[in-house]
Image 1 (cartoon, rainbow, N blue to C red):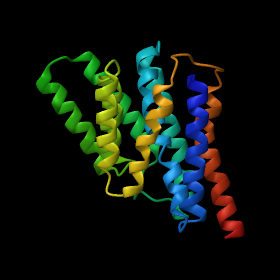
Image 2: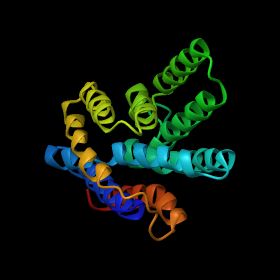
Image 3: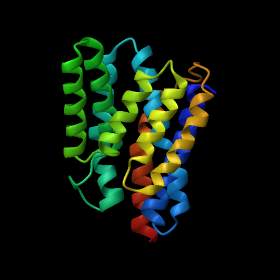
Image 4: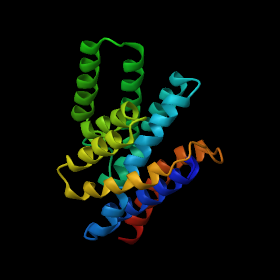
Length: 210
């Protein structure tokens, strides 16, 4: 299973999740299906970290789309511009920043400080998945060559959320472990744009038909 296929699975899962959250909040099974999305995105982010030829450009792209996506995110979930909750691109951006910091500084004390600081920022700005999401990215990178520890740590992260529906996210490990290391078709900007565009579409459907 290549990266393109994993992205498709994550996109479909995320769409189902957001349909459930925005349009049919009583249908919890939709939210359970949607829990597969973030662990897959976290895994793909770490793969991007290890293979990217320009990490600065990668980080700026994530931050740029975090800003672009914030208004569609707020409209879809709150109906107005709000700072209660930040979109998942902020989580992915912070996770990448942490991996870069850890790569450039091997001092164990400072490494722990970096981890604590990035987790605190994620928690304070209320970005999607908050600090467990950051830890998920960290564990995918740290245990990349140790499948058992990778599975265990990611499972613990998914169990750690207050909402029990995130426990379904453990199932994302199945497609992740089928990853063959290949990229597949390269249409990355289509996937980047998919996030804000599908949120705008759901906002339009919600305001027009619900």
